[in-house]
Image (cartoon, rainbow, N blue to C red; front, side, top):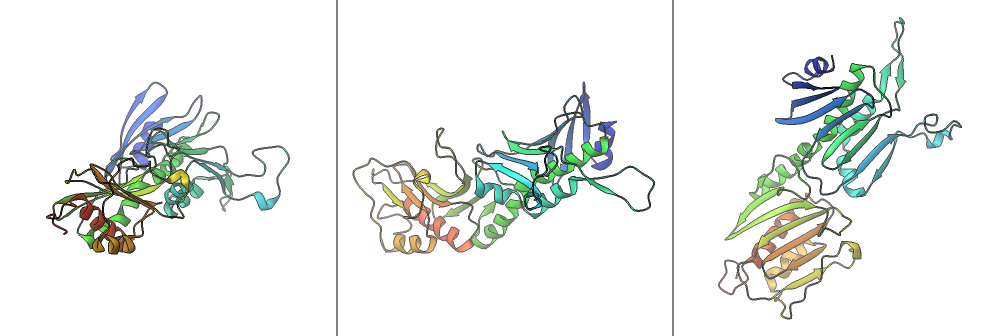
Length: 314
């Protein structure tokens, strides 16, 4: 019954039954999403998503009556509570379409024969983004196949956020002559790729600089260096919190900031710039889709990636 409900709500979906669970492949926004649904003994709807680089987001409905016997004041009865390890990324993930789908999934029709439908709030479901998966869960079984499909729709709205997010970068890509990815992968494949002179420059969204880094959303413009002279450079914006600083460099010689580099640095205004022995990284705190600043950062990365006197930018 649940498999048929998935196929009826999402035309073209392919389903298979594995014991008490249903596995589905759902076409949406020119991509396929793998989902699993189980109505009992604990109801779960989960959809796999691209890399999120350790990002975690938990949402639960903030009802005055559901969490304790004594009701809270009405001023606390907002839509839902948000718990996350990255506030900037959480704000970006919960766009208008995601919020609208979550709010719509909260209401269920009350049984009865009245001409006017009575909508009841269902606060039993909790939503989560973690381990490269979006899920909706409740503590007990769900007897309604329609409610399971409602939760699948809300979960897919959250899961398709990387595709909607990529569209903002697609507009930037067209303006600066870059190639845009069809969807965002945090800590995964580049969002943008562009060729500048002899340099291949990539723009990525990442959270962690290393395994021990707790994570903070960054936009990183990077390129490989083609001049292994050993010179390095480290520039950090005064307002960048120390937790977001990149690792310190140990090289003894420093690359020179010439007039072109100074001009590009002023235009890009990055949070941190690292010129290492084999690569260049220009980083911004948070997600950046500003065309002019990204264009300047890409030119700067290309400039320093071939910093020999006879390179294409000298």
